[in-house]
Image 1 (tube, rainbow, N blue to C red):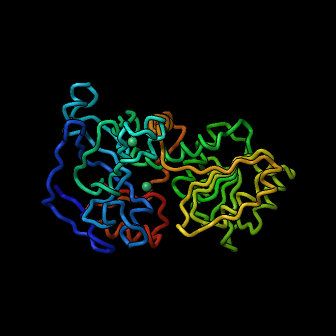
Image 2 (image 1 turned 180 degrees about the vertical axis):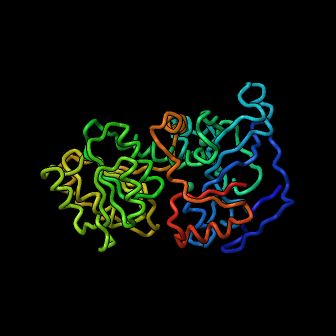
Length: 355
Ligand SMILES: [Zn+2]
Ligand SMILES: [Zn+2]
């Protein structure tokens, strides 16, 4: 099959003779139809983070946000009648074991023996890929392969929403209008939030956020922006008549955003940290204020058991993924795709590889 094989930072080879994956008893093989380029793929390719393989290096096929058409079904899913060749599916890259203690408690995102497609085993930047049948989900009929490629980030956003717990009428602040933030805006609105304030640094993303349901947008970086706001706290104070936000979600790596999230939330607020900072980064918490206002500070990682709900949000139109798809590349153009996402050529939001 054709595949892009990653060896080490900035060394990736496009081949046409990689071995076709074969389904083991508990696996399904798919023809990849669309695979999103994630910020983490860019980080692996440019050496900003290392893979989760044994030695942190390749060779490995990257890509973990993808859909496909089933071509081979292993013995177990075949006997269970779960999948057939031709099925349109999306793959959960987190291949958890369903058997370790933490899996049995339901937190499969934390599985002690998990492997991750495109991160520790071969992923979706190839013609074909295989996955455990328990990680294969059918796409709703009206969801295209391209839209379906956003299910993984959406499932993560869905888990963040679950951790935040939105009540009707809540004032919610979301930091970071990337794909996750833009889907979180839609989820939070669908869950009944009153006002959603979206905070970012680029107008094209913020303006899309407004079209997708954000009531107010703030650009904290660009002084020439009509949405420029250098004091998010004052803005929230004004919009809530001093009560401050009920919920805040950070989907960015920015420590400033995390500190601001602690600052702009009010009594009994819930703050969810989701975007990944550097491993040496630290957040300072105003402990006394947080106690006196009975706040909850929470973290959110991956997407345990939120895939069916994310797929249903796509299928019922509660989340519209289409406007987030900003560009498509052929498999052989992956290097250019990674470079253009890194350098933000053409204002990308979510670029896809379509083999
Ligand atoms: Zn991703
Ligand atoms: Zn496990």
